Length: 333
Ligand code: SF4
Image (cartoon, rainbow, N blue to C red; front, top):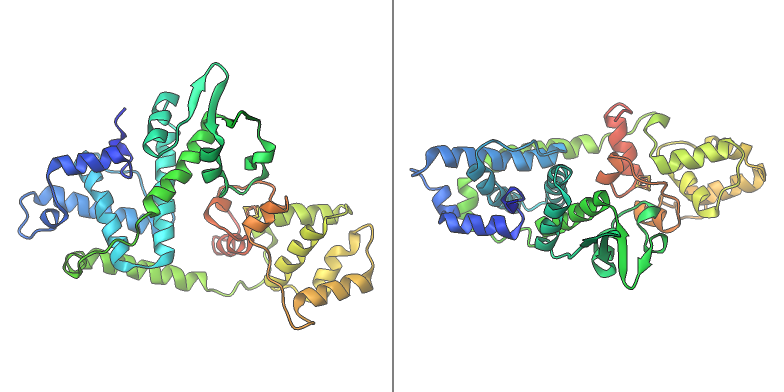
């Protein structure tokens, strides 16, 4: 397999170098390769716009344009120099790579892993990864199944499935893409990409404006899995750990429920004591001067309150961001 299809790989960077093209050459006007230049620029824009919109579409058939579009996309991201865009871009490139990885066989995944600096081993007993390689990627995974304590560890090696290896490589790819961004790009190069940059800036600012919308009425269907699980257990009258109750309370207050409504949610708890519950909810809501924020996904996972991510979870780092996104999509997806 050629790794050139993974534009962040060392092999792809080498291929770009071997072609002899420079960025200046690609953007030169008049251009010796107008078609290639046009396709690469269009695909570079597609990559960054796709990241803003949530997904980079599959690439064009022209392999050189695909190869050059990646450095061009990095330059566009760097000229804009916006933290949110940089993070979304790295994540979107990693997701695109993840889709390709799903079609690779194990030998190719191992090749890619080595390019990404990990060294998995495959044998009779399955695939294993050194725990230091495992931890680097798994530290960002939110579901409890990724925690090292929940894995079988033998002499420093962690057993993983092929699917898990691909997920780990996706995370490594995200780090690789994000590393070094923003690049130091000379202003004259940014000027040459002015059209692409304006297009991305326009979309980015409209996305940001949309994301600031008022959440309006509480939409239960848009709650993230972690909150739904606790809600269901509370509704079934099951006792909850303090951290889970705290997460539920802060979340419900943050999405606009008032103290009375939140207290009513807990009235099925076996130890429901209205006065005590009200006191606690009021305290969390800020009666004592400090209003508490819902915990992030990382904290939820640390306390065992993340039941496992769904598709949307992989794009967020906070249960409230999950909710906001889903509300905007009409509670679906
Ligand atoms: S929103 Fe975060 S904490 Fe909640 S289920 Fe998804 S990943 Fe886990």
